[in-house]
Image 1 (cartoon, rainbow, N blue to C red):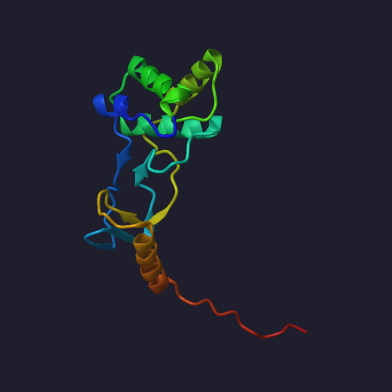
Image 2: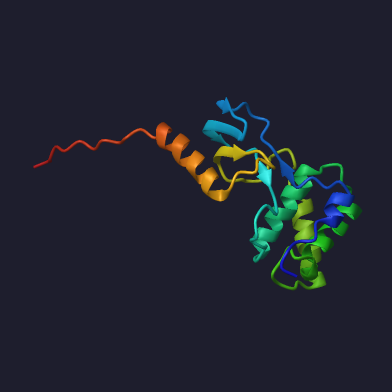
Amino acid sequence: MSHRNLTYLNNNRIIYRRYSSENPTSSHGWGWYYADGTHGYYALFNNKAKINTIRSLKWHLLTLWYLNPELDKTKFIQLAEYIIYKENGFVTFNIGSKLINKVVEDVFKQDLDKPPKNRLRKIVFKDGTGLSTSQKLSIVGTIIGKSKSKITIPSHRVI
């Protein structure tokens, strides 16, 4: 299977995308610009890349649990088993039941008061804007290009 089967997540109202709750520097029809960046935007399974390491699997499961704190341990284990089942298209590897249990226990011990580490984003596009990749890259280049200040290095020599 080349694509992910999101049916279980959608049918069970599992949140796997969330916009940042921080105030953007500017809002646009296509999305938001954060001058200092935001770590609060989560968009799991938004591209073709699959989970290919245990570390990545733990991060995805922790993020899913962070975005869905109402899940009890039983429901969380069901979700984890769904994600881990290779035929559903989320992972590239098979994982044994002992390791599944260890991963789930490790994730379940984490503190949900602290958000999972997430990459800093300055630009967040709204879903369904209809923009092509080249249009998005053009917007990023225009906005980020404007915000970058040129760094000058003094040209004095030390003798």
